[in-house]
Length: 601
Image (cartoon, rainbow, N blue to C red; front, side, top):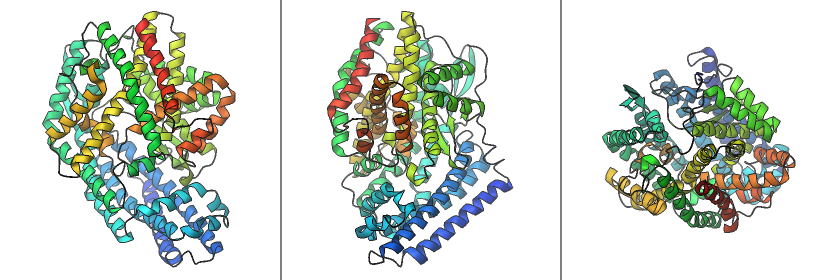
């Protein structure tokens, strides 16, 4: 690995700093937008009803759309800028104070969104006619009709307002506590003959170290670290899920899956078809686990072996090498994609350096005010991290397609299911190209291994997370759960999905502590959409292989419009029926073919 330091991102073209007149002015402008929206809602919307002339309603809808888009664009820009500091340095007190101040404005926006949803519900009988009276409204037909449908699941305006305010001291506070505790935790760990203080993301990344002794010790150190802070994390999870259950019940939801399905813009038959196909695939994945165990000289894999490298995978990539690898393979897919990624690299849109105080994992966030994105990763030189950056750049390209099409914020509200479409495609483009170019069997094995590790996470492990969260909701409805309860539920969920593929003595009972997805208020079951994204993206890649260059424009059009249709409608553009198990089984068959290749080498 040649020496090239992973970069930190640059947002100086957004605002020059946290304590600058420019950011302060943006804050004040955003507050004024909200105040004007509140006045508009009170003076213009509240006095109208389905009896009001549709022409007047159409004009009001159009004006509301304009006002909300403007407020969301500026607010989204401020939020992203502040979070760029919070997520990379949890010790930054200025950023944390500004984040807290900004959350007050977000509560006001949440209240306004609720009021608008309620108003749309009141005029729902004449909504179609009103939309036709205003071009701005017509351009937002899908989101307006969806809003009318979701208005059925609101409490009263005063109750929704109170819930939004209480969230700051309730579920959102629990969420922040989890993020703060896990990002500030570090462990003294001996590596290469030297004791180092490692952040938890850095320690977790040692799961893929080639030396089993390092992997095992890292696993043991991680379990011990989580054991020391499990009680506040259990309280956090109880708080977030308890709040969710209370609000779901008061809003008239059928069960704890009702809202997540609506948020994902899929229905129960779609989820059931996908879950059924996933269960059928476990036999193949266990075959992969057994084959991997045999390759590393073990009867069964322990948890610390799940991410172990196999084949000629001891190579580490410098950041510059990762960059060139990604750009080269993006170019083969589409020059538009490659040119975009080049811009992201050249302008330091990516924060890839590992450091204490920085949150783990990876994500991409849009910065709407400058029509750009920023990517966070924790680059360690592994092929997996190369794939991660390609994946996150896919999210950024998704945003770019919407920006290019001049989509508004309201038109871009993409559900989690479709949000993975571009990221999976980009990750697949890179991994498949690398696999094809590999002539050495051990190199091919290493590439297949990296790919299958990811597939197993998104199919097998995600299913275990789905089982975990389902039982947590069922039991949390009756009483709070202890840290031991959470650990027990997690281990049983892992046994149900990994089966005899892993050594049941060495599972990971603390997976619930550090996955932030469990702690997002109002965003439950942030798991199955990842599987949807992988399998839908895999299906699209198969279509791309058949259609070639002719596929690209339709694909970019899809990415630009993922906020303007249900998942079934958007998939239908490519002849895909997501309510049928056969589609999901077909995508899983692609993964099973990789497992076959893996076992033959």
